[in-house]
Length: 115
Length: 115
Image (cartoon, rainbow over all chains, first blue to last red; front, side, top):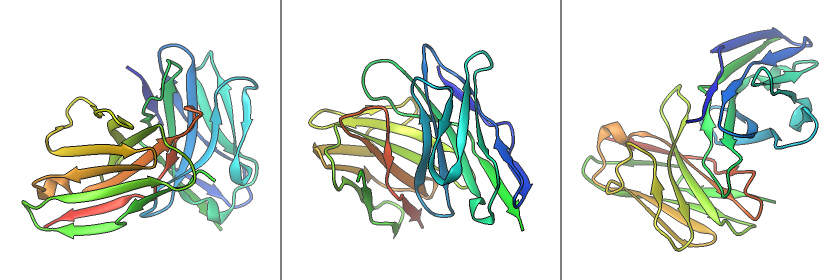
């Protein structure tokens, strides 16, 4: 069975500082990894994904994430946080088996950017 | 591109009644659609996977007779919550994959409240 761990319920960062939201995963075979952001009472917005290739993945709104196979991690990062980045962030994984599979999500991390 | 809509965005129904939620892919053909459920302050849990023209595959613990899924066309899947109870109150989110099965595009969600 696949799983995702987001060890922090909440991350507080001052505006302008770099931010990191942590994610580790467990999956059989090669992982497909995703980050999504959710604003209150809204659906999920796609930020970025890792399928194969470069370990550093760049996504929407200046976010990036680094795939680390040895540590089974896929931490989300941004060099300079904005107040508007405050939201709920989900890391998700699926295995690379054939066909389309549903995603397994982490429990989410509330990111709070303080002015 | 890759827009998924849901209707209604919110619904209130009385205990014992049934509610239908629609999920549509607006600008692509969705070979597979997924239904997720999100309780307040919790993560998304995959309920079922549906492929056009075939029966849905339900995750363990999800009652298929209670949560009826119909994927009648490549652009429409419906979730019907039958004989709804207050514990079915939740945020229901659908997603869809197109020709590339790597990425899922999420709808905005439907807030169901059963009184």
